[in-house]
Length: 277
Image (cartoon, rainbow, N blue to C red; front, side):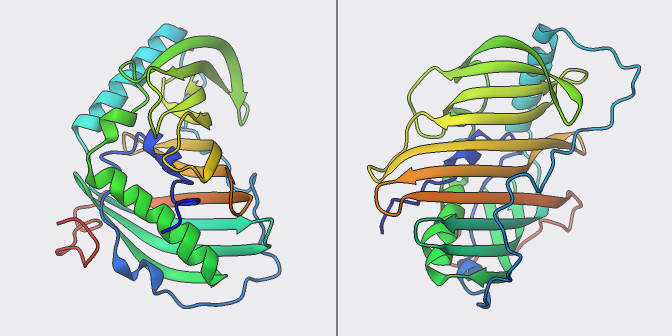
């Protein structure tokens, strides 16, 4: 298997979602084919960050308190993973070859290590589907099934933090921190995180992966937005650009919404072949 695109989205290893990625259904490659509509576009600014509703009277946290609150939430989500289902749309593009694809799936996570993707609809080029999107999903699966969330969490064990001041996301004040990994390990990144100035919740992470696992991937840059949903901080939108040695740039955009934590939302039978038991 060519590994030039396999790790495009190991940036999700930085996700704080509970227990996050598990086992993938082998049906993820079986959605019907179709042609891309003329209006299909790789719209980096299309999906906006959804910040939690915060009363105007809520005081602004000191940077140290915001970081402490954020780290407490990281620890809780690592130690108390929760099952859920959600909708995911993955759009990928290879500009140098003018190939594109868009895959809509239903994501079901069963704590602590099982993730299933049920295909809903795919349109685009088969090459992008098989060699970019399907492998991207498998990378998520591998990360979760190995229980590596603690090794890639954004916390003091993995990163050094330095405060850079107050900025804004969607006209909302956030504390900006520079993050530098303590080790050069796949899944870790060098860049910045933005914490809600009133709640300490993670709003955005952005930067460059410090290491890829493939000679064919030279660099991966990303921006990932988060939202607070039912007490958990979860990824809602990500954009990444990978520079590869074989196919040039590879662009990936992932949007996730409609999170459901109800008891039936993520209940599944034994995963199909290719998933973890």
